Length: 75
Image 1 (cartoon, rainbow, N blue to C red):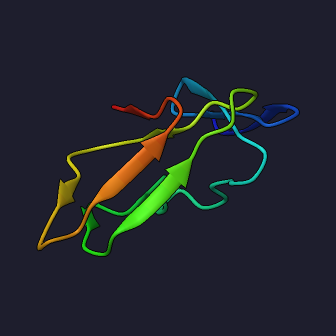
Image 2: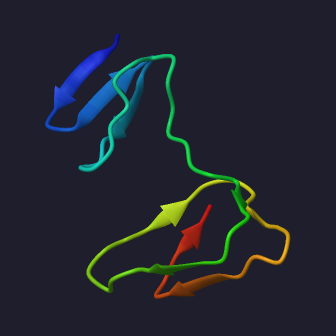
């Protein structure tokens, strides 16, 4: 059984997943995705009122510097 169960809550093949405001997966052949390589010096500021996460292995390559201000969880 598949489909919407409630606000931002979906069921697919018996698995229930909660959606997130700011991003949503609307097709069964799509998935959450994020970058896997930081190749430019950058700063990411994570406000204390938000939860941020990235998934998968992420490399910082070349002479890039990735500065993270706050708490970022990488799963």
